[in-house]
Image (cartoon, rainbow, N blue to C red; front, side, top):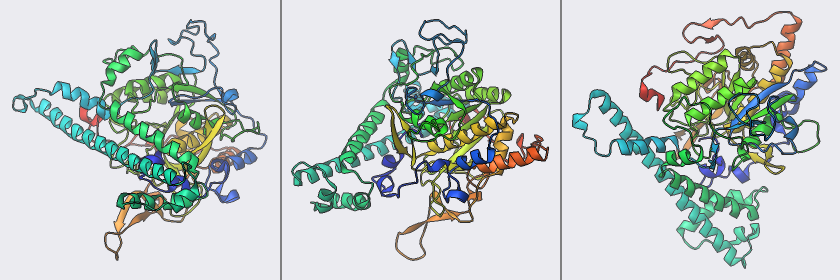
Length: 572
Protein backbone atom coordinates (compact mmCIF):
# COMPACT_ATOMS: atom_id res chain seq x y z
CA UNK A 1 0.00 0.00 0.00
CA UNK A 2 1.94 2.94 -1.24
CA UNK A 3 0.56 5.40 1.23
CA UNK A 4 1.33 3.96 4.64
CA UNK A 5 5.04 3.36 4.47
CA UNK A 6 7.26 5.85 6.29
CA UNK A 7 8.28 7.75 3.18
CA UNK A 8 11.37 9.41 4.44
CA UNK A 9 12.91 6.30 5.98
CA UNK A 10 11.84 4.07 3.09
CA UNK A 11 13.39 6.20 0.39
CA UNK A 12 16.48 6.69 2.37
CA UNK A 13 19.50 4.98 2.96
CA UNK A 14 19.20 7.70 4.34
CA UNK A 15 18.01 10.90 2.67
CA UNK A 16 18.27 14.00 4.80
CA UNK A 17 14.73 15.22 4.43
CA UNK A 18 13.41 13.91 7.74
CA UNK A 19 15.78 15.85 9.94
CA UNK A 20 17.52 18.39 7.71
CA UNK A 21 14.54 20.32 6.42
CA UNK A 22 13.56 23.65 7.94
CA UNK A 23 10.60 23.48 10.25
CA UNK A 24 7.37 24.40 8.50
CA UNK A 25 5.19 27.09 10.11
CA UNK A 26 2.62 25.78 12.58
CA UNK A 27 -0.58 24.61 10.89
CA UNK A 28 0.89 25.72 7.57
CA UNK A 29 -1.61 23.63 5.63
CA UNK A 30 -4.41 26.08 6.53
CA UNK A 31 -2.47 29.24 5.59
CA UNK A 32 -2.41 31.16 2.30
CA UNK A 33 0.31 32.14 -0.18
CA UNK A 34 -0.88 35.77 -0.45
CA UNK A 35 -1.55 36.51 3.20
CA UNK A 36 1.08 34.33 4.86
CA UNK A 37 3.58 33.62 2.06
CA UNK A 38 2.90 29.93 2.71
CA UNK A 39 1.42 27.59 0.12
CA UNK A 40 -1.31 26.10 2.31
CA UNK A 41 -4.95 25.73 1.31
CA UNK A 42 -6.01 29.20 2.47
CA UNK A 43 -8.65 27.95 4.92
CA UNK A 44 -8.08 30.71 7.49
CA UNK A 45 -8.66 33.39 4.86
CA UNK A 46 -11.62 31.45 3.46
CA UNK A 47 -13.45 31.70 6.78
CA UNK A 48 -12.81 35.44 6.88
CA UNK A 49 -14.23 35.73 3.36
CA UNK A 50 -17.28 33.66 4.31
CA UNK A 51 -18.01 35.87 7.30
CA UNK A 52 -21.32 35.02 8.93
CA UNK A 53 -22.50 32.76 6.11
CA UNK A 54 -24.18 29.65 7.54
CA UNK A 55 -22.98 26.12 6.86
CA UNK A 56 -24.44 22.64 6.63
CA UNK A 57 -22.81 19.68 8.38
CA UNK A 58 -21.00 17.42 5.92
CA UNK A 59 -20.02 13.80 6.54
CA UNK A 60 -16.52 12.91 5.35
CA UNK A 61 -15.67 9.21 5.18
CA UNK A 62 -12.05 8.32 5.88
CA UNK A 63 -11.21 4.96 4.31
CA UNK A 64 -7.95 4.08 5.98
CA UNK A 65 -6.23 1.84 8.53
CA UNK A 66 -8.23 3.03 11.52
CA UNK A 67 -8.83 6.17 13.57
CA UNK A 68 -8.49 6.94 17.28
CA UNK A 69 -12.03 8.21 17.82
CA UNK A 70 -11.21 9.28 21.40
CA UNK A 71 -8.40 11.66 20.40
CA UNK A 72 -8.78 15.00 22.20
CA UNK A 73 -8.79 16.91 18.90
CA UNK A 74 -11.19 14.55 17.09
CA UNK A 75 -13.67 13.00 19.50
CA UNK A 76 -16.27 15.74 19.03
CA UNK A 77 -16.14 15.52 15.22
CA UNK A 78 -16.53 11.74 14.87
CA UNK A 79 -19.68 10.63 13.06
CA UNK A 80 -22.23 8.67 15.08
CA UNK A 81 -24.73 6.45 13.32
CA UNK A 82 -28.12 7.83 14.42
CA UNK A 83 -29.87 4.52 13.79
CA UNK A 84 -27.58 2.30 15.84
CA UNK A 85 -27.74 1.54 19.58
CA UNK A 86 -24.18 0.95 20.85
CA UNK A 87 -22.98 -2.49 21.86
CA UNK A 88 -26.31 -4.33 21.88
CA UNK A 89 -25.25 -6.90 19.28
CA UNK A 90 -28.15 -5.94 17.01
CA UNK A 91 -28.19 -4.37 13.56
CA UNK A 92 -30.67 -1.71 14.69
CA UNK A 93 -30.75 0.28 11.45
CA UNK A 94 -30.73 -2.93 9.37
CA UNK A 95 -27.93 -1.74 7.10
CA UNK A 96 -26.19 -5.12 7.32
CA UNK A 97 -23.57 -4.08 9.90
CA UNK A 98 -23.99 -4.80 13.63
CA UNK A 99 -23.09 -2.02 16.08
CA UNK A 100 -21.53 0.22 13.44
CA UNK A 101 -21.76 3.20 15.75
CA UNK A 102 -18.91 5.27 14.27
CA UNK A 103 -18.19 3.27 11.13
CA UNK A 104 -17.06 -0.20 10.10
CA UNK A 105 -14.00 -2.39 9.56
CA UNK A 106 -13.73 -4.73 6.60
CA UNK A 107 -10.46 -6.06 8.04
CA UNK A 108 -11.77 -7.82 11.12
CA UNK A 109 -13.86 -10.75 12.21
CA UNK A 110 -14.56 -13.03 15.14
CA UNK A 111 -10.89 -14.08 15.26
CA UNK A 112 -9.34 -10.63 15.47
CA UNK A 113 -8.18 -7.87 13.15
CA UNK A 114 -5.76 -7.80 10.23
CA UNK A 115 -2.80 -5.47 10.77
CA UNK A 116 -0.23 -6.47 8.17
CA UNK A 117 -1.00 -7.75 4.67
CA UNK A 118 1.10 -8.75 1.69
CA UNK A 119 1.27 -6.67 -1.46
CA UNK A 120 -1.25 -7.36 -4.21
CA UNK A 121 1.67 -8.43 -6.40
CA UNK A 122 2.69 -11.03 -3.82
CA UNK A 123 -0.85 -12.42 -3.68
CA UNK A 124 -1.05 -12.68 -7.46
CA UNK A 125 2.33 -14.39 -7.68
CA UNK A 126 1.43 -16.82 -4.89
CA UNK A 127 -1.68 -17.89 -6.80
CA UNK A 128 0.29 -18.08 -10.03
CA UNK A 129 2.93 -20.27 -8.45
CA UNK A 130 0.24 -22.82 -7.61
CA UNK A 131 -1.55 -22.58 -10.95
CA UNK A 132 1.58 -22.85 -13.06
CA UNK A 133 3.63 -25.23 -10.90
CA UNK A 134 3.63 -27.88 -13.64
CA UNK A 135 2.64 -25.72 -16.61
CA UNK A 136 3.56 -26.80 -20.13
CA UNK A 137 3.59 -23.67 -22.28
CA UNK A 138 3.59 -25.77 -25.47
CA UNK A 139 0.08 -27.03 -24.70
CA UNK A 140 -1.49 -23.69 -23.80
CA UNK A 141 -4.17 -21.89 -25.75
CA UNK A 142 -3.41 -18.39 -26.96
CA UNK A 143 -5.30 -16.88 -24.02
CA UNK A 144 -3.57 -19.17 -21.53
CA UNK A 145 -0.17 -18.36 -23.01
CA UNK A 146 -0.89 -14.64 -22.67
CA UNK A 147 -1.88 -15.04 -19.02
CA UNK A 148 1.19 -17.20 -18.34
CA UNK A 149 3.42 -14.54 -19.87
CA UNK A 150 1.90 -11.90 -17.59
CA UNK A 151 2.42 -14.19 -14.60
CA UNK A 152 6.13 -14.51 -15.40
CA UNK A 153 6.43 -10.73 -15.67
CA UNK A 154 4.75 -10.32 -12.31
CA UNK A 155 6.98 -12.96 -10.72
CA UNK A 156 10.07 -11.11 -11.94
CA UNK A 157 8.67 -7.82 -10.56
CA UNK A 158 7.94 -9.52 -7.24
CA UNK A 159 11.46 -10.92 -6.99
CA UNK A 160 12.86 -7.47 -7.71
CA UNK A 161 10.73 -5.95 -4.94
CA UNK A 162 11.90 -8.58 -2.46
CA UNK A 163 15.50 -7.82 -3.37
CA UNK A 164 14.87 -4.15 -2.65
CA UNK A 165 13.48 -5.07 0.77
CA UNK A 166 16.48 -7.30 1.45
CA UNK A 167 18.79 -4.45 0.48
CA UNK A 168 17.00 -2.06 2.81
CA UNK A 169 17.22 -4.54 5.69
CA UNK A 170 20.97 -4.89 5.07
CA UNK A 171 21.37 -1.12 5.09
CA UNK A 172 19.39 -0.89 8.31
CA UNK A 173 21.73 -3.46 9.85
CA UNK A 174 24.72 -1.36 8.78
CA UNK A 175 23.21 1.71 10.37
CA UNK A 176 22.31 -0.13 13.58
CA UNK A 177 25.89 -1.40 13.79
CA UNK A 178 27.16 2.15 13.27
CA UNK A 179 24.90 3.45 16.05
CA UNK A 180 26.11 0.69 18.40
CA UNK A 181 29.75 1.66 17.74
CA UNK A 182 28.99 5.33 18.41
CA UNK A 183 27.38 4.38 21.73
CA UNK A 184 30.27 2.09 22.68
CA UNK A 185 32.79 4.87 22.12
CA UNK A 186 30.63 7.20 24.26
CA UNK A 187 30.13 4.90 27.29
CA UNK A 188 26.77 3.67 26.09
CA UNK A 189 25.22 7.10 25.57
CA UNK A 190 23.86 8.26 22.22
CA UNK A 191 24.26 12.00 21.77
CA UNK A 192 24.64 14.43 18.89
CA UNK A 193 28.17 15.20 20.07
CA UNK A 194 29.04 11.48 20.05
CA UNK A 195 27.90 11.16 16.43
CA UNK A 196 29.95 14.19 15.38
CA UNK A 197 33.13 13.00 17.12
CA UNK A 198 32.95 9.36 16.05
CA UNK A 199 35.71 8.30 13.64
CA UNK A 200 34.54 5.64 11.13
CA UNK A 201 36.50 2.41 11.26
CA UNK A 202 36.16 1.25 7.64
CA UNK A 203 34.87 2.21 4.19
CA UNK A 204 31.35 1.01 4.96
CA UNK A 205 31.18 3.23 8.04
CA UNK A 206 32.61 6.16 6.09
CA UNK A 207 29.73 5.76 3.65
CA UNK A 208 27.22 5.75 6.50
CA UNK A 209 28.84 8.80 8.08
CA UNK A 210 28.71 10.71 4.80
CA UNK A 211 25.01 10.05 4.38
CA UNK A 212 24.27 11.01 7.98
CA UNK A 213 26.31 14.22 8.00
CA UNK A 214 23.49 16.64 7.16
CA UNK A 215 21.01 14.72 9.28
CA UNK A 216 23.21 14.93 12.37
CA UNK A 217 23.99 18.63 11.88
CA UNK A 218 20.30 19.52 11.70
CA UNK A 219 18.66 21.30 14.62
CA UNK A 220 15.77 18.86 14.28
CA UNK A 221 17.98 15.79 14.86
CA UNK A 222 17.15 13.93 18.08
CA UNK A 223 19.63 11.08 18.65
CA UNK A 224 17.55 9.53 21.43
CA UNK A 225 14.66 9.06 18.96
CA UNK A 226 16.80 8.16 15.95
CA UNK A 227 17.83 4.71 17.20
CA UNK A 228 14.21 3.77 17.95
CA UNK A 229 13.06 4.95 14.50
CA UNK A 230 15.71 2.85 12.76
CA UNK A 231 14.98 -0.30 14.78
CA UNK A 232 11.25 -0.02 14.20
CA UNK A 233 11.70 0.53 10.49
CA UNK A 234 13.98 -2.50 10.25
CA UNK A 235 11.32 -4.60 11.96
CA UNK A 236 8.73 -3.28 9.51
CA UNK A 237 10.87 -4.16 6.49
CA UNK A 238 11.48 -7.65 7.88
CA UNK A 239 7.76 -8.13 8.50
CA UNK A 240 6.92 -6.92 4.99
CA UNK A 241 9.48 -9.33 3.52
CA UNK A 242 8.10 -12.25 5.54
CA UNK A 243 4.42 -11.57 4.92
CA UNK A 244 4.98 -11.28 1.17
CA UNK A 245 6.06 -14.92 1.15
CA UNK A 246 3.05 -16.10 3.17
CA UNK A 247 -0.35 -17.30 2.02
CA UNK A 248 -2.22 -14.27 3.29
CA UNK A 249 -5.47 -15.54 1.77
CA UNK A 250 -5.54 -18.26 4.43
CA UNK A 251 -4.72 -15.72 7.15
CA UNK A 252 -7.51 -13.50 5.89
CA UNK A 253 -9.93 -16.44 5.77
CA UNK A 254 -9.23 -17.30 9.41
CA UNK A 255 -9.46 -13.74 10.78
CA UNK A 256 -12.23 -12.15 8.71
CA UNK A 257 -14.08 -15.27 7.61
CA UNK A 258 -15.41 -13.89 4.33
CA UNK A 259 -15.39 -15.74 1.01
CA UNK A 260 -12.20 -14.52 -0.65
CA UNK A 261 -13.22 -16.05 -3.97
CA UNK A 262 -16.32 -13.84 -4.09
CA UNK A 263 -15.39 -10.20 -4.88
CA UNK A 264 -19.06 -9.19 -4.78
CA UNK A 265 -19.65 -10.25 -1.17
CA UNK A 266 -20.92 -7.31 0.86
CA UNK A 267 -21.55 -8.02 4.52
CA UNK A 268 -18.57 -9.11 6.63
CA UNK A 269 -16.13 -7.51 9.08
CA UNK A 270 -16.55 -6.00 12.55
CA UNK A 271 -16.81 -2.64 14.29
CA UNK A 272 -13.17 -2.48 15.47
CA UNK A 273 -12.56 0.76 13.62
CA UNK A 274 -9.33 1.71 15.40
CA UNK A 275 -7.51 -1.45 14.37
CA UNK A 276 -3.99 -2.47 15.42
CA UNK A 277 -2.41 0.81 14.20
CA UNK A 278 -4.52 3.94 13.83
CA UNK A 279 -1.63 6.38 13.31
CA UNK A 280 -2.18 7.00 9.60
CA UNK A 281 -5.96 7.33 9.67
CA UNK A 282 -5.88 9.54 12.76
CA UNK A 283 -3.35 11.85 11.09
CA UNK A 284 -5.49 12.02 7.95
CA UNK A 285 -8.64 12.77 9.96
CA UNK A 286 -6.90 15.53 11.88
CA UNK A 287 -5.91 17.33 8.69
CA UNK A 288 -9.53 17.30 7.55
CA UNK A 289 -11.40 18.08 10.72
CA UNK A 290 -9.42 18.54 13.95
CA UNK A 291 -11.33 20.91 16.22
CA UNK A 292 -10.63 24.52 15.33
CA UNK A 293 -11.82 26.18 18.54
CA UNK A 294 -10.57 24.01 21.41
CA UNK A 295 -7.05 25.49 21.78
CA UNK A 296 -5.54 22.01 21.45
CA UNK A 297 -3.11 20.55 18.92
CA UNK A 298 -3.97 21.74 15.44
CA UNK A 299 -6.76 23.29 13.42
CA UNK A 300 -8.47 21.12 10.85
CA UNK A 301 -9.39 22.58 7.47
CA UNK A 302 -13.16 22.01 7.60
CA UNK A 303 -15.14 23.46 10.51
CA UNK A 304 -18.47 21.64 10.29
CA UNK A 305 -17.87 18.01 9.38
CA UNK A 306 -18.27 14.59 10.93
CA UNK A 307 -15.64 11.93 10.27
CA UNK A 308 -17.04 8.50 9.36
CA UNK A 309 -14.38 5.86 10.04
CA UNK A 310 -14.07 2.95 7.61
CA UNK A 311 -11.22 0.51 8.06
CA UNK A 312 -10.16 -1.18 4.82
CA UNK A 313 -6.44 -0.41 4.49
CA UNK A 314 -3.87 -2.67 6.20
CA UNK A 315 -0.12 -2.20 6.42
CA UNK A 316 0.40 -3.67 2.96
CA UNK A 317 -1.92 -3.62 -0.04
CA UNK A 318 -5.65 -3.21 0.41
CA UNK A 319 -7.97 -5.66 -1.33
CA UNK A 320 -10.26 -4.44 -4.11
CA UNK A 321 -13.27 -6.06 -2.50
CA UNK A 322 -12.74 -4.15 0.77
CA UNK A 323 -12.27 -0.82 -1.02
CA UNK A 324 -15.45 -1.31 -3.05
CA UNK A 325 -17.44 -2.17 0.07
CA UNK A 326 -15.93 0.76 1.98
CA UNK A 327 -17.07 3.17 -0.75
CA UNK A 328 -20.56 1.67 -0.77
CA UNK A 329 -20.79 1.82 3.03
CA UNK A 330 -19.81 5.51 2.99
CA UNK A 331 -22.35 6.34 0.30
CA UNK A 332 -25.19 4.39 1.92
CA UNK A 333 -24.59 6.02 5.29
CA UNK A 334 -24.59 9.64 4.15
CA UNK A 335 -21.03 10.65 3.29
CA UNK A 336 -20.68 13.57 0.86
CA UNK A 337 -16.88 13.34 0.56
CA UNK A 338 -14.68 10.24 0.76
CA UNK A 339 -10.96 10.48 1.42
CA UNK A 340 -8.80 7.64 0.05
CA UNK A 341 -5.16 7.94 1.13
CA UNK A 342 -4.04 4.60 -0.25
CA UNK A 343 -3.23 2.88 -3.50
CA UNK A 344 -1.31 0.16 -5.32
CA UNK A 345 -0.16 -0.80 -8.81
CA UNK A 346 -2.11 -4.04 -9.35
CA UNK A 347 -5.90 -4.43 -9.21
CA UNK A 348 -7.28 -7.87 -10.12
CA UNK A 349 -10.90 -6.94 -9.32
CA UNK A 350 -10.90 -3.38 -10.59
CA UNK A 351 -14.37 -3.83 -12.10
CA UNK A 352 -15.79 -4.24 -8.57
CA UNK A 353 -14.30 -0.91 -7.51
CA UNK A 354 -15.46 0.69 -10.76
CA UNK A 355 -19.02 -0.31 -9.92
CA UNK A 356 -18.68 1.23 -6.45
CA UNK A 357 -17.25 4.45 -7.90
CA UNK A 358 -20.16 4.61 -10.36
CA UNK A 359 -22.53 4.10 -7.43
CA UNK A 360 -20.89 7.01 -5.59
CA UNK A 361 -21.10 9.09 -8.75
CA UNK A 362 -24.83 8.35 -9.07
CA UNK A 363 -25.35 9.48 -5.46
CA UNK A 364 -23.33 12.73 -5.81
CA UNK A 365 -20.45 11.69 -3.56
CA UNK A 366 -17.00 13.20 -4.19
CA UNK A 367 -13.96 10.88 -4.06
CA UNK A 368 -10.55 12.35 -3.23
CA UNK A 369 -7.57 10.07 -3.85
CA UNK A 370 -3.82 10.27 -3.21
CA UNK A 371 -1.66 10.06 -6.33
CA UNK A 372 1.10 7.91 -4.81
CA UNK A 373 4.56 8.26 -3.28
CA UNK A 374 6.96 6.67 -5.74
CA UNK A 375 7.99 9.76 -7.77
CA UNK A 376 6.20 8.24 -10.76
CA UNK A 377 4.37 9.73 -13.73
CA UNK A 378 0.78 8.49 -13.39
CA UNK A 379 0.29 9.20 -17.11
CA UNK A 380 2.80 6.42 -17.82
CA UNK A 381 2.02 3.97 -15.02
CA UNK A 382 -1.50 3.77 -13.62
CA UNK A 383 -2.04 3.35 -9.91
CA UNK A 384 -5.20 1.86 -8.46
CA UNK A 385 -7.93 2.66 -7.69
CA UNK A 386 -8.42 5.31 -10.34
CA UNK A 387 -11.17 7.14 -12.20
CA UNK A 388 -10.72 5.38 -15.55
CA UNK A 389 -13.40 2.73 -15.95
CA UNK A 390 -12.48 -0.57 -17.60
CA UNK A 391 -15.72 -0.33 -19.56
CA UNK A 392 -14.70 3.09 -20.91
CA UNK A 393 -15.18 6.65 -19.72
CA UNK A 394 -14.09 8.26 -16.48
CA UNK A 395 -15.62 9.19 -13.14
CA UNK A 396 -16.62 12.86 -12.92
CA UNK A 397 -16.62 12.80 -9.11
CA UNK A 398 -12.91 12.05 -8.62
CA UNK A 399 -9.98 14.28 -7.60
CA UNK A 400 -6.43 12.90 -7.85
CA UNK A 401 -3.94 14.75 -5.64
CA UNK A 402 -0.15 15.13 -5.55
CA UNK A 403 1.86 16.48 -2.61
CA UNK A 404 3.45 19.90 -2.19
CA UNK A 405 5.40 21.79 0.49
CA UNK A 406 4.89 25.13 2.19
CA UNK A 407 7.59 27.18 0.48
CA UNK A 408 7.41 28.41 -3.10
CA UNK A 409 10.41 27.54 -5.24
CA UNK A 410 11.85 24.72 -7.29
CA UNK A 411 11.40 22.23 -4.42
CA UNK A 412 7.74 22.94 -3.71
CA UNK A 413 6.59 19.57 -5.09
CA UNK A 414 7.26 16.70 -2.69
CA UNK A 415 10.30 14.78 -3.95
CA UNK A 416 8.35 11.53 -3.44
CA UNK A 417 5.09 12.62 -5.06
CA UNK A 418 3.59 11.03 -8.15
CA UNK A 419 2.45 13.46 -10.81
CA UNK A 420 0.85 13.47 -14.26
CA UNK A 421 -0.26 16.12 -16.73
CA UNK A 422 -3.31 14.02 -17.63
CA UNK A 423 -3.92 11.95 -14.50
CA UNK A 424 -3.16 14.15 -11.46
CA UNK A 425 -5.56 17.05 -10.93
CA UNK A 426 -3.67 19.36 -8.59
CA UNK A 427 -1.23 19.51 -5.68
CA UNK A 428 -1.95 20.11 -2.00
CA UNK A 429 -0.07 20.26 1.34
CA UNK A 430 1.66 16.92 1.83
CA UNK A 431 5.20 17.64 3.06
CA UNK A 432 5.93 17.96 6.77
CA UNK A 433 2.28 18.22 7.81
CA UNK A 434 1.62 18.26 11.56
CA UNK A 435 -1.50 16.43 12.69
CA UNK A 436 -3.03 14.03 15.21
CA UNK A 437 -1.81 10.54 16.06
CA UNK A 438 -3.29 8.16 18.67
CA UNK A 439 -3.22 8.77 22.42
CA UNK A 440 -3.69 12.55 22.17
CA UNK A 441 -0.36 13.03 20.43
CA UNK A 442 0.71 14.89 17.28
CA UNK A 443 3.37 14.29 14.65
CA UNK A 444 4.71 15.47 11.31
CA UNK A 445 4.10 13.17 8.35
CA UNK A 446 4.74 13.50 4.64
CA UNK A 447 3.02 11.88 1.68
CA UNK A 448 0.26 12.23 -0.84
CA UNK A 449 -1.65 10.60 2.04
CA UNK A 450 -1.55 14.06 3.63
CA UNK A 451 -2.25 15.93 0.37
CA UNK A 452 -5.46 13.99 -0.22
CA UNK A 453 -7.11 14.99 3.11
CA UNK A 454 -5.85 18.55 2.62
CA UNK A 455 -7.97 18.58 -0.54
CA UNK A 456 -10.83 16.59 0.99
CA UNK A 457 -10.97 19.17 3.78
CA UNK A 458 -11.30 21.99 1.25
CA UNK A 459 -13.95 20.03 -0.69
CA UNK A 460 -15.88 19.49 2.55
CA UNK A 461 -15.63 23.20 3.37
CA UNK A 462 -17.09 24.04 -0.05
CA UNK A 463 -19.91 21.52 0.37
CA UNK A 464 -20.66 22.95 3.84
CA UNK A 465 -21.17 26.52 2.62
CA UNK A 466 -22.36 25.85 -0.93
CA UNK A 467 -24.49 22.70 -0.51
CA UNK A 468 -26.20 23.18 -3.86
CA UNK A 469 -23.04 22.29 -5.78
CA UNK A 470 -22.78 18.79 -7.22
CA UNK A 471 -19.63 16.70 -6.80
CA UNK A 472 -18.32 17.43 -10.34
CA UNK A 473 -18.95 21.14 -9.73
CA UNK A 474 -16.94 21.08 -6.51
CA UNK A 475 -14.11 19.47 -8.41
CA UNK A 476 -14.44 22.01 -11.22
CA UNK A 477 -14.26 25.05 -8.96
CA UNK A 478 -11.24 23.66 -7.08
CA UNK A 479 -9.51 23.05 -10.41
CA UNK A 480 -10.36 26.52 -11.70
CA UNK A 481 -9.19 28.42 -8.61
CA UNK A 482 -5.81 26.83 -7.84
CA UNK A 483 -2.94 28.99 -6.67
CA UNK A 484 -0.21 29.04 -9.29
CA UNK A 485 3.51 29.77 -9.39
CA UNK A 486 5.63 31.17 -12.18
CA UNK A 487 8.59 29.08 -11.05
CA UNK A 488 9.62 25.91 -12.75
CA UNK A 489 9.75 23.05 -10.26
CA UNK A 490 11.85 19.93 -9.85
CA UNK A 491 9.98 16.95 -11.27
CA UNK A 492 10.04 14.11 -8.69
CA UNK A 493 12.39 11.29 -9.65
CA UNK A 494 13.36 12.80 -13.01
CA UNK A 495 17.00 13.70 -13.60
CA UNK A 496 19.30 14.56 -16.48
CA UNK A 497 23.08 14.48 -16.77
CA UNK A 498 24.86 17.76 -16.28
CA UNK A 499 26.65 19.19 -19.27
CA UNK A 500 29.89 19.12 -17.33
CA UNK A 501 30.93 16.70 -14.65
CA UNK A 502 31.30 12.97 -14.88
CA UNK A 503 28.23 10.91 -13.90
CA UNK A 504 26.58 13.94 -12.27
CA UNK A 505 22.89 14.67 -12.64
CA UNK A 506 20.46 17.47 -11.89
CA UNK A 507 16.67 17.44 -11.53
CA UNK A 508 14.53 18.04 -14.60
CA UNK A 509 12.43 21.16 -14.15
CA UNK A 510 9.00 21.85 -15.60
CA UNK A 511 6.07 24.19 -15.12
CA UNK A 512 3.45 22.92 -12.68
CA UNK A 513 0.98 22.93 -15.58
CA UNK A 514 3.16 20.26 -17.21
CA UNK A 515 2.87 17.84 -14.27
CA UNK A 516 -0.81 18.20 -13.30
CA UNK A 517 -4.07 19.12 -15.00
CA UNK A 518 -5.02 22.30 -13.13
CA UNK A 519 -1.46 23.65 -13.02
CA UNK A 520 -1.42 24.62 -9.36
CA UNK A 521 -2.26 24.12 -5.69
CA UNK A 522 -5.70 23.78 -4.12
CA UNK A 523 -6.91 26.97 -2.44
CA UNK A 524 -10.10 27.25 -0.41
CA UNK A 525 -10.14 31.04 -0.27
CA UNK A 526 -9.87 31.37 -4.05
CA UNK A 527 -12.72 28.90 -4.44
CA UNK A 528 -14.92 30.66 -1.89
CA UNK A 529 -14.32 34.06 -3.51
CA UNK A 530 -15.23 32.65 -6.91
CA UNK A 531 -18.42 31.07 -5.65
CA UNK A 532 -19.52 34.12 -3.67
CA UNK A 533 -18.88 36.31 -6.69
CA UNK A 534 -21.00 34.05 -8.86
CA UNK A 535 -23.74 33.98 -6.24
CA UNK A 536 -23.75 37.78 -6.09
CA UNK A 537 -23.98 37.94 -9.86
CA UNK A 538 -26.71 35.31 -9.80
CA UNK A 539 -25.04 33.08 -12.35
CA UNK A 540 -23.74 29.52 -12.44
CA UNK A 541 -20.82 28.57 -14.71
CA UNK A 542 -21.29 24.88 -14.12
CA UNK A 543 -23.55 23.89 -16.97
CA UNK A 544 -22.26 20.32 -16.93
CA UNK A 545 -20.91 20.77 -20.43
CA UNK A 546 -19.31 17.49 -21.42
CA UNK A 547 -16.28 16.61 -23.47
CA UNK A 548 -17.64 13.89 -25.76
CA UNK A 549 -14.33 12.02 -25.78
CA UNK A 550 -14.16 11.60 -22.01
CA UNK A 551 -17.62 12.31 -20.57
CA UNK A 552 -16.19 14.68 -17.98
CA UNK A 553 -16.57 18.37 -17.25
CA UNK A 554 -14.72 20.36 -19.89
CA UNK A 555 -12.11 21.72 -17.50
CA UNK A 556 -10.53 18.27 -17.45
CA UNK A 557 -9.33 16.15 -20.33
CA UNK A 558 -8.29 12.62 -19.46
CA UNK A 559 -7.15 9.89 -21.79
CA UNK A 560 -9.15 6.73 -21.43
CA UNK A 561 -7.27 3.45 -21.02
CA UNK A 562 -7.03 1.74 -24.38
CA UNK A 563 -6.67 -1.82 -23.12
CA UNK A 564 -9.69 -3.25 -21.29
CA UNK A 565 -8.93 -6.94 -21.17
CA UNK A 566 -8.38 -8.90 -17.97
CA UNK A 567 -4.73 -8.04 -17.55
CA UNK A 568 -5.44 -4.35 -17.96
CA UNK A 569 -7.32 -4.63 -14.69
CA UNK A 570 -4.20 -5.97 -13.02
CA UNK A 571 -1.45 -3.90 -14.55
CA UNK A 572 -1.86 -1.23 -17.20
